[in-house]
Length: 411
Image 1 (cartoon, rainbow, N blue to C red):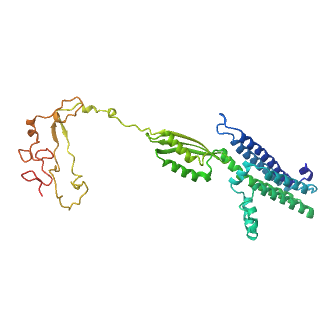
Image 2: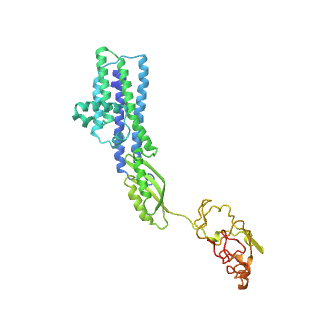
């Protein structure tokens, strides 16, 4: 009624702050109701998100009111009406008293937390720069102005100051356009103050991880991954449940021989310092050992011919290998100090009978060869008969560096 009698849009913009204070009282009542309620099967995480929703709705409505004031102010610039100052100053002080009483007399936990956790507004930053200059001259005021003032008290005082300037200019010079300018200033201050709080509460509603706790969460997860029995920590998700409370879930893979209850207790003890509502899923490692029965047998192994050929490996790539250390040797390096009767290059494949090469356990005839046939197959004493290689058992195979008449390596 006073806003319509004075025809002041600046007083209307300041009255919207009073309506915002009424919504803050409703938010405070919701906060006390949430403290008395306990989690239910429907709301397993509790009712803390009702506080977040109330703060988000209050700040968004205040910004919508500021946009409405900007629209009306743009219309008034085209045709400025006359402003009556009879109740302008009285309405300003009544609204200022109500706003300060509401913010200072009641402990409003949701708005107090949001005002500290959200980013600073442009009004707070400018006032903080001015406060540093004032505190440099009067150090005793640092406890009041620093580090940053309450944004709600700041906007109440700044809006009342703008209305006082409007009253003075209208009374002295009948400059009615200053009322519209003050309304635009109050609307911009309201929008700039409420926008960071709306962004912060909106991110809480979207279940995002707070940026200021990401470093602490990474540190705790690294500590959990180094616990005894823990192999892997994965599928971790942490979000803000309410103002000041963090919820999360994590999957922990442990060894097969680890104690599940012991690992669960250690993981919960580490993460509970930061995450109040935590869900930990423990599961053991599920690796499987391969069995021999699962290895298929090739069909060609069951159809062996009377004679099969075992190809000798090519020694072309091994020409530069040291026979003692199996490492590449220089072409000009001398032969090793000791060498044995090893096969040389270009060795023809060896043909063995199936009586000696049939695998054991596959249903074939097996057994040892007759003693009289040993020397016929080339496993004789070195230096006797046609057998020349003792270690290889191959006949007529020259050594790499040659052998003497007694079958021993040449120096």
